[in-house]
Image 1 (cartoon, helix red, strand yellow):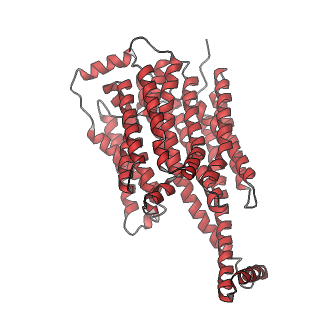
Image 2 (image 1 turned 90 degrees about the horizontal axis):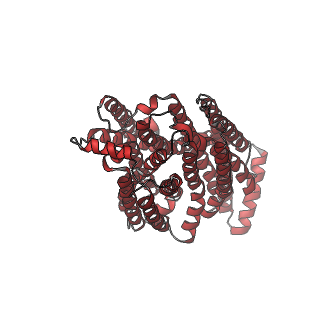
Image 3 (image 1 turned 180 degrees about the vertical axis):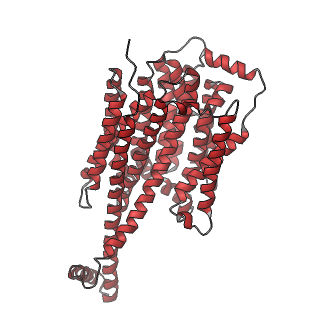
Length: 518
């Protein structure tokens, strides 16, 4: 390909692959129960459907800069898109759970290069000082995919089949392949660097990749299965093994990469204060997004009895407003607004939305569920879009591709961390409130006995069996107790998330001031 394409054409071409990756991650995460049920698998194994994709994609993200440097970024992106499309189609055609998990591993291995290569292509297409807005556009589209995917996925699952979550993505992946093939090209600097690298023997750090894969996979298992396996009380020591694998694997990986002459993953961008602060803000922002999303799902599905489509529609207004606020945020960045102010203001808005939910109860309508969610999404958009745009601002040109890989890794894994932390807190607080609620369920409590008597009489009129009516009355009271305890646990998750958002605002103040425009 001759000549340099228009920079904004590059943004358009590389944005779709990254959006597909994040949308598919969000949709399959919410639809796991339908996928496992459709294949006749054990619901407990649904965890591996998501983890197989997340772990392999996360392990490949920081290593993508090495592959792009040796294969060429355009060639590597095309390879990833072709493999991603093929693996996605095979996921949709899987006939059993084991085959699906295997193809999810392949899918994640190819998907891992899409986000970091897209970011690196944008950084190369725009001169320094004009990279914030296009990177923010890239961030806005992926966030929009995350917010809108549950709505679309819920409708697809209910109207058609879980298979169309995967099969419907294949044509879009082919469109993305055509866009990258027509528009993206390697800059002269990357071509010269590739020639220099290939002029000497290529040594791939298999040990480093193995350590990274073991560490990331163990971390995913530890935070994803720890609650189910009772953490360090696990009699089979599975949690202990996963924890050891995560700590030892990642520690040895970092030690190896810091000492290697040609590391698989360049960790030097983390030494830059601006980059490190932005990584911390991104970690906190995505933890907030995913942990609150899990609590919202519990509210609308487990407590209110909504199906997948209705649960998806609970997020639709927030997603639509989030897209609109993204446009406003990009406009403000184009006018030269300080990203720090947007990050701090957005974090405080998120905190307000979370504290709003924490003050609610079960006597609420769908509108009262959606309103604070909209507030939270508005704040998260104000946080996540600007911070990605300025994260690589102060990095040397030869480290920006490595920075893009590390940012993608943090964005991806923070979703898993947020989901797991939210689930752990939800279960713990559910247990706490169940015990507290049981204190008032005393046979000497006249209100309890009057309630049971009314339920018993109602069920007796329906069944004509006094013993069954008595048991059904107590079962209904137990169900009411469980709903109340779970609702209080959901509200507690939001209360903790509100304080995390306040902490993110404090971290945002550590970002550097923007350079003065000439």
